[in-house]
Image (cartoon, rainbow, N blue to C red; front, side, top):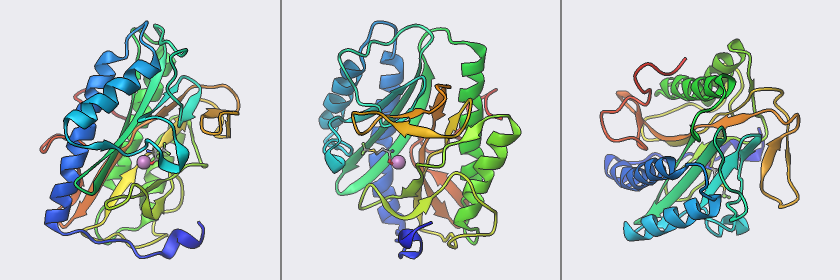
Length: 268
Ligand code: MF3
Ligand code: CO
């Protein structure tokens, strides 16, 4: 962890959390639309245009567009791409692809951020398993986000879940606090030891985002300066939720209220 590690973490009121949830529900709805639109023959640039238009129609703005110079609204990372894939008219989805869709918006000054990984048509069993394990890792991480726990509990939960199932956890990218900015303290690594790191408290809002590789954990960045890929060329998956820590435990803001985050018959 670096110098950011002990920066003050904002504690949000119930009203602020409700406003973050409004942004998060826009993210959720548009991710569902993108998932449905991710079919063979569609380019990733078309998906990006769909997201931007739907965002503006909801009175929100894409959070990633222009962020540190990022040139699009969605990060779309296909197969061995891990995160931060740049949408392109030349990248046309094909049956069997594994597509990471990472998306955030700002609405009324509050941010929401979420990612899913979806299959294009029928995918190999190994790819399906990678999706399932990564989604299960996110569920385990969310369950660890409770008041009086520690940031390290979250990463430890991800790492234990993933490594027990023979996959590896990406180290080079972390989750983050979120609220008035896309990235706020603390950093939320997807590995670590239970009982370490900053204390979790009611009112903290975290974007928890495990990235899991089928092969080794190392990643590298392509010449476009953004797209992270697995060094060994293995498949990678990414899931992310924006989560509020409350007295009653974690609340996933990037799902409709009452949803559990784990689809029936999925997870673990
Ligand atoms: N969910 C990612 C993150 O939190 C996406 C942001 S990357 C951007 O880091 F630069 F494109 F915005
Ligand atoms: Co994020």
